[in-house]
Image 1 (cartoon, rainbow over the protein chains, first blue to last red):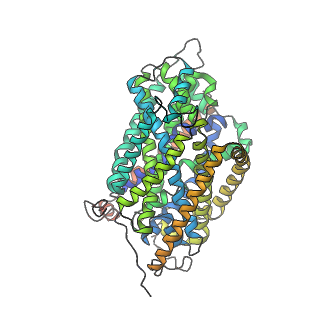
Image 2 (image 1 turned 90 degrees about the vertical axis):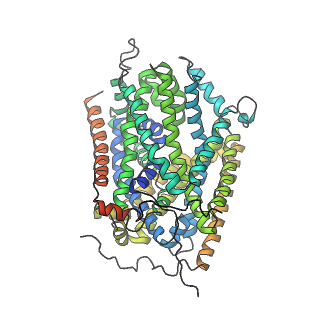
Image 3 (image 1 turned 30 degrees about the vertical axis):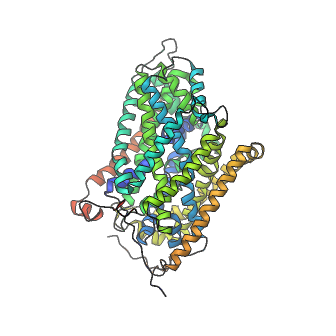
Length: 533
Length: 54
């Protein structure tokens, strides 16, 4: 019988700050600047921050710690992909299939996220050239967006004269794959080390501009900087009586920290057993919150309110970003420059996120099938190009993008999050979890967090998931029944799910044959030695 | 901007920045020896990302 073997990945982070910036970069994205402000405005303004911070403490940060811990543990066993890590933690036949979600989710999200990323770059470019300075004409910006992304009809972007965005998509695609090909240290970490600070500086510049706007239209004195801040932060405590507010807050925290994406567990697997995850996880989370609360919360909605009034609160994420804000920059002094800066910052935020979505699949292909980097990047490039091409072609009403975002980028993330909290709290065990979390830790995480992870987080997350399904799934089921593109999108997603599940099955068989699990202790039977003073 | 709005804004932003400052302070003040032990042991890490790519 073959001896157990532990394959050690050559990939490792080059520095502590590097992994923190990479995880922060993965988390910081369009949602920090566009989704959070909109959610707050629609759910009680400043009152929204109460359930938001409660969710952060009971769900977000604890789940982050759990994912960092399990990821590093899996890495110590020679696994960097979710199927392998889950199999190392949970000696059950279902583990590899649950882990397949950790490959599929970031893979599918990448397929449409790279398209949105290209929109940001395209908008930044068009601000640079002045093409997006069309004066105070709201319809002009709406038409620009519709033409730019192909909302009018399917295949629109492949017709003559409307394919500018395709060039940006190709560029962003290549940028992502060049960086991920260079690897964890030389690619992802190196990029994040400069991209995050540049993002912060750009955001602070735009923030400074917004906070110094005063009252641009004297005939509307209420549309001032203070009025804009009030629109975002004045609390409507009545909203706290509505369960939807709590649902929205918890959902926002969950998504903003990139928990359940399959990314943190992959990134953490490249750490050594003695590398800290407690302080690193807390730092990455707090960085994300800085971009969300301190920057996103101070820029987007106040700026929109100052120029557009109370209608600013009615926009969804895309409308706010690509329709409302161009109107704002058109009216803002120095708007061309700040518009460029804003969309370039969003582009960087999107790239640091999309990079993180490719690495889990790369890791899986490399360790599951011993593909070298060239081959795994080529295979992944082909799969994601097909997916992105699907999204780009079926652009009418952005139906394909919306379907991918809902079923995978929203629903399945909840599922993976619940799987992870179950694994940590009930399979890995909080006794062992506490020991593992504090291996090399530079801060002490209160014992209470373990009980939160075992008893509170699962209930909290389960309640959110059920409420979310009740509120949203029926509408999407109806959409599938009447829209052929929606139905085709579902088939496409099921195809990918089946394909990744099959790969996970094959990879697991290879690991078993290689004896990769033979020297692993059964979780729960390992004595939890004390490592803290 | 109401008083409650100011309060929530200031407390929220202060809390987040305080948490971030605490985290970064802890990281930047890690003892040198521990810092080296907790990153890779070599001063330059060749991750062989592309060397054996073929």
